[in-house]
Image (cartoon, rainbow, N blue to C red):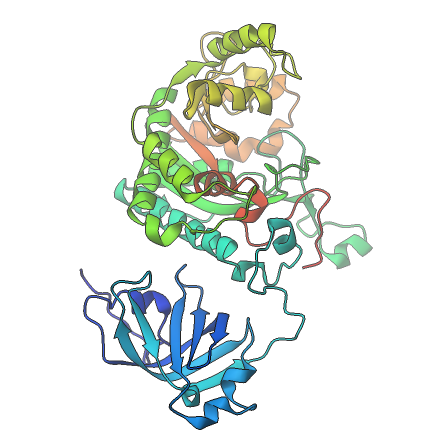
Length: 477
């Protein structure tokens, strides 16, 4: 394995992740190990301390023989001052292989080698016991120290790294479109307005016009794609919708990709499927480090269930069906077991419809060619009243990726904007791309929290982002 040269003028503190990489060629001793006390047991002749440092799901077991140094039995001994949650420095320890145990090694030391770096109060919330996700969510400054939510953050990091690998290997350039925008990309009107306090006071606008937090970076991404051919971004997006469910956030992260010289929606679905499956392959390769062995009961799927789903995702190509074919299936099902919302051609699919379709195929499913009035103004028109678009829906979660071929004809785009009553002059900068070397192009957006939560087996996307912002929620921190 090639090593990465470090340009740091000093060595960073040793992490547990780096220690577990030394199993095949271990050192005799380890100096200056730092972590937080996960649990400890003080027995008559030995003490066991489990430390965690957040870089790996595995705890590091520290063993302290208590019959060698009398000071360890004193009431003021460091061992007797230990509490769950404290930060601890182990200055020096002996590496002892334990090949027959769950942890392949442990560190043996004396209490004299300990230094308590940070104390915790008696009321420290994360004691050595089962904690529900509801309880963890009520402790936002501490919840990520739990096994489950800490693992979920590391999992998200791995997914993002895998996505970077995928796009790099296919000649995409990563870009950073703006977060402050002048308009609504999706046309749904669910916008957060932004203004400075001083301009609010004098009833003026900082930029001279109304400014919003972006709901999607797509329009700016199209500008960049016309220069870079293929580009992608992972950026925060904001939607002021009132939906307060386990599938909706007011602030979320969206991966968006834009490609020039693609002409049909089938090509986009193949790219999206390849991206999805590449990430899954990378997850399977790192399953031991990514999947926690203990999950909150009733709040998440167990590791075996998640791994089985990952494996099944790679087994076959995913089904594709048109919106019209989907409506036929849903109508037939509705006649047998009625949905809450009646499926009918021309109306958007509801969440219950999407989940049933994915369950029916027991697989992610691509739905293509929706009616034009169900989708955004920028999508390319088919020969009928549909547009060249797709949604990827998955079991339990519903829609997770949406994309389309973009309208590349200036007159056709302006006509559609006018038909919808849009202010054409406000988006002339966008429409003008069609006058300057226009090419067939398209792209898609992936909701990162839905993607991460579904892959990890979490049932609530609020756990897939460090600090969730949602309708009816709190902005206290």
